[in-house]
Every structure is written in structure tokens, then in C-alpha cells.
Image 1 (cartoon, helix red, strand yellow):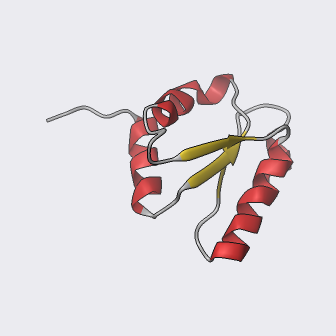
Image 2 (image 1 turned 120 degrees about the horizontal axis):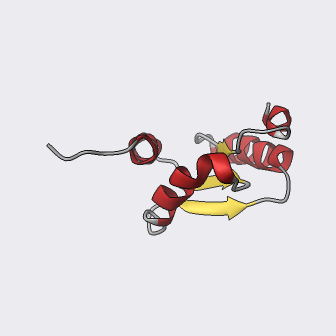
Length: 84
């Protein structure tokens, strides 16, 4: 059986949901996710934002316009509350 890490498993689920764009701001706590996302650059489009709150708003805006699921990533730390 092939081993898969948590980041790859999460992105597989996100792909299965039909998500095309992921918004966010990279940081140390999501390095493995960013590496896994890089390996999926042909199927998932990562859009880097300047602030976590902007990523959340962009994902909501995309969801409202397209009717699809909007996704944003943020790293753990003092800026995390801005995603919610």
C-alpha cells in the first residue's frame, strides 16, 4: 500500500470536490501543504494574497459568483483569526 501524507490526502479531497483555486498566504506551519500544492500545480491554482483576510474574502467571493466551493489556506499564528 502506498503511503500518503496528510497534505496530499487533504488536497486529493479538495480536488475531488472540484476546487480549482486556493487562496492563501504561505507560512511555516503549512510548508508540507505548500509542497504538496506545488506538486499539483497542473490541477490546483494557488493564488497568494497579502493578508489572510483577503484570502478568505476571495474564496467567499468566488463561491458566491461560481456556486462552487471556495478554499483559503493560512498558517498558524497571530494572524489566523483574520481568516474566520
